[in-house]
Amino acid sequence: MANLCYTPPRHCPSDIYLPHQLKDCEFVFVRNDSVKRPLTPAYTGPFRVLKRADKYFQIRKGIHTDNVSIDRLKPAFIEKPSSHTTSQSTPQVQENFKTPVSLDKPKYTSSGRKFNVLVFNDNTISFYLSIYLSIYLSISFCSYLSIYLSIYLSIYLSESLLIYIPISQSIYLSVVLVR
Image (cartoon, rainbow, N blue to C red; front, top):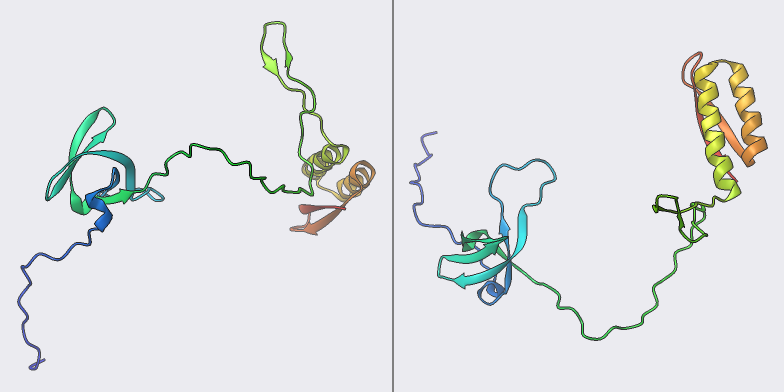
């Protein structure tokens, strides 16, 4: 303890990193220094730069202007829209599980509202129906009868396999495996 010596505080200003693109950028992001809720972005923007000074920038936020210190700014690089369009083919993604697809043209009700008719794959309907029936039967009966009935119905309807995992004496967790 006797060897420790007192170091006076440093009163000189600390250096702040300023990106060199900040001097000629057209748009900037502004750092939010307040206490933030979880998953709130640290920067807002981009905002257009109207005027530059040594220590602050004047930016347009919506319909009003605001003076912001340069240590809260980060340059925003906005991609300019291309004048020509390229016809590059996008890669096709194959799905193993078919989702509901609307094959018909939109139909109209008598009042003039537009609606689509969804056409389901047979496996999709039977899959959802087997899950619904297994949950309904396990909640309503809570017995071995519900297990046998839901296994029979799921195999009959969707050719899927239900696995029951006992959680307690009368509650079972059902897992559906589709072939």
